[in-house]
Image (cartoon, rainbow, N blue to C red):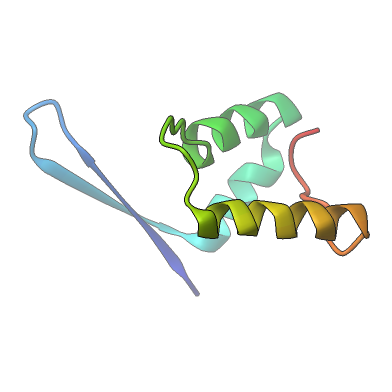
Length: 80
């Protein structure tokens, strides 16, 4: 059984930690609407970054686009 550890700063600026069993998190996600899953995905996994891509990042994006075009990718089960 896996556990996810999430840390954040509390109102008093102290570090807070929560441990959540992965199975509980998966069951929670399965019970949510598609809209709720999208919102969680956007807030947890999507970061805004204004720094230009490095050459390595640019190459990774180009490789991913090629894999997508050739059908080598898998469908993400959440979102659109």
